[in-house]
Image 1 (cartoon, rainbow, N blue to C red):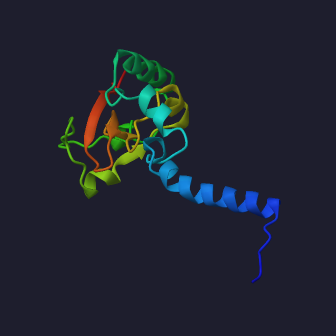
Image 2 (spheres, helix red, strand yellow):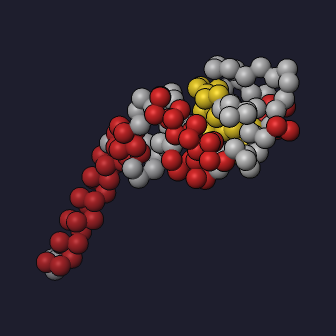
Length: 147
C-alpha cells in the first residue's frame, strides 16, 4: 500500500481554493453587490428623494438661462417651440415628441444634481424635464422665453 505525502504548501493552496469557492456565492448574494455600478448604494442614499426639482434647482436653471438667453441651446430656441404640444408631469413622450427633445448642455447639467438612476434631463418645448426610462415626464421646470 502506498502512502501519499502532501506537501504543506499544496495543503495551504488547496485549503485556500476550497474556502474561496465556498465563500464566493455568499459574497455575490449580498445586497450591496446586487445593484449595478460600484457606488450605486452611496448614490441612492445621497439622491434618494431627488426625483423632483426643488427651489434651488429652479434658481440654478433661471440664472443659467439668464446668462445664455442671447444664444439659447436647442430646445429653448424660438424655432423649437411647438404650438399645440401638451407637456406636463406624467405625460408620456411618444416618438413624435421625442424627436423634439434635446439634451441638456453640459454646463447646466454639471450645475444640477445628478439625475436619479435611470432618469435623464431633457429640454423639451422650452422646459427642462426630468424623464424616466419609459419616457414619462416626472417633473419639469418652465423656462421663460423672453426674459
